[in-house]
Length: 143
Length: 143
Image (tube, rainbow over all chains, first blue to last red; front, side, top):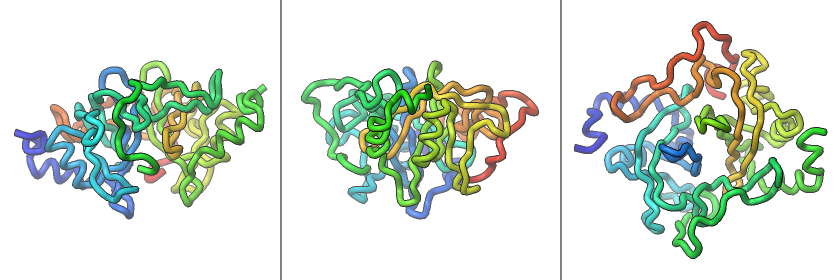
């Protein structure tokens, strides 16, 4: 039984109805490693990719640049497994608690947030490359 | 000496120039408690509110609903102090490492992400009220 089946259609529909998608049908999603608390990336989801994520347990986003579903890890093998999903108070942002295999960032870093704007070394990269020569996502540029 | 002064005008300008603001001049900002890792809220910033945040050390957002600066905690007293700021790989999202005093959410909860979409109790509230009768922000509704 999938997660979505487990939820039951009525509950799931009513939960999805509380999400405030923008005029493009998108909602912001923050992915956080469920155990370490690392904020890994921010991307976009549609109602359909949320459903797919709940049904399969593998996180699926919407790529704005390619205009298509983007099942995280299909190219790189660095899958994101869903451990929990939360909605914020005004319903326009999701927090995904995930188990990220390998780097989340297409640059090969664990987190996309590797550039420091302030701190001891402003402008410095604060995230090392996760694995030299690691395969990366096709999702370069604007997601 | 403020953080912004410490950075130097050239470095700060070049850092701010790497941020990709949308056509409204806004960039998404994720606020995370710097020590516990809690994701507290997601809001918007402009170039001016980023500068104010760096200069004062107190986080200042842009309220889309009110069309004005929103210095977190001015109404509620629940200030957010900046401990670090990072930019993501494609330059359109900031991660703020903050020290949040009291609840971050205008509903009185520590985090805005208090509604579970999946998990053992879908639809349940997973964040308790931080403090009964706590003063809340004026920022109800869409930020």
